[in-house]
Amino acid sequence: MIEVKDLSKSYGSKQAVKNVSFTAHENEILGFLGPNGAGKSTTMNILTGYLSSSGGQALINGVDILEDPITAKKDIGYLPEQPPLYLDMTVMEYLNFVYDLKKCKLPRRSHLAEICSLVRISDVSKRVIRNLSKGYKQRVGLAQALVGNPKVLILDEPTVGLDPKQIIEIRTLIKKLGKNHTVILSSHILSEVQAVCDRIVVIDKGTLVANDTTENLSHNLSADHKLTVQIEGPSKEVKSLLKGIPDMVEVHVNREVEKNVTEYSLNAKEGVDVRREVFKRMAERSYPILLMRSSELTLEEIFLKLTTGDFYGNTENGGTSR
Image (cartoon, rainbow, N blue to C red; front, side, top):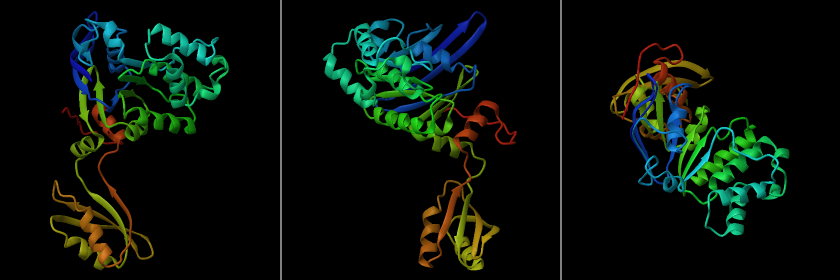
C-alpha cells in the first residue's frame, strides 16, 4: 500500500534522508521511530506530499506522490502532531468543511455521522471546537483524517498530551482502524508502539537502521537468550528437572524469592525454546511457575541500541537492517 524506494532529501549540503526504503502493507500498522533530528518528520512530510524528495520514490497505492499528488492524496488521511483545527467552528461545521475541501463523493450526512460514531465525538458534534478538551480535539483531528475513507492513515504522535484513559481509548481506536486501513504511526511513547504496531521501522541520522517485528529485533539484538523463572518447590529437585531438559546448557540458581520459591536462570542452546518443556516438567510435579521472563531486549532497549549503540549502561555497538 505504501512503498518507499531509495528516498532521499537534502537541504543544501545537509542530507536529511539517505536512500530510505520500506513498505507498509495493506491493513498493517507500521510504527515509525527515530530520535529527534533523525529524518523521521521529513520522511513523513514527503509521504503526505508536504515536501518534495531529492531522490527516490514514495508510492501510495501504486501512485507516485510527486508525479500525481492529487490522486495519491485521495488515499491519504493525515493527522499531524498539532491537529489542523478551526477553533471557532463547531465539530460538524468543521467536518463539513473538510468534506468539501477533500471533494468527498460519499453520502455526506451518513458518512460524517459514521465517522463521529467511530471516533466517539457524536455527543460534541454541535459544540465549538475551542471549548473541547484536549482529548476531544485529538479525536476531531482523527475524524478529519478519516473523511473520504482513505486507504492510508499517517498519524504523527496521536496521543501526545492526553491523559492515560484517553491514550488507551485512542490506542484501541487505532488498532480497530488497522483492520481496514494501512496505518503509519509515529510516536515517542515506545510502549504505545509495542502495544499497537505489527512491525516497526527505525530511522537514525537519515538512514534506515531497522525494519522488522519487535520480537525479531529483540531476538537478533540480544547477546543471549536466557530465561528467568521463579518456581515453587524443592530447589535441588527443581534444578535437576530443569538440567534434564534436552538442549539445556546451564541452570543457575539466582536466589530464594520467598519460602520454598527459588529463582533460576536458564540458558539453552541457541535457537531452542524450552518454555513448554519447563512448563510440562513442573506441571507433572505440581510445582507452580510463578514467573517466566525472557532476558531479550525491550523496545526501549532496542531503540537505544539502534540509535546510540548504548542501552542501560551497555556500550557495545549494535544495529540491524533487514
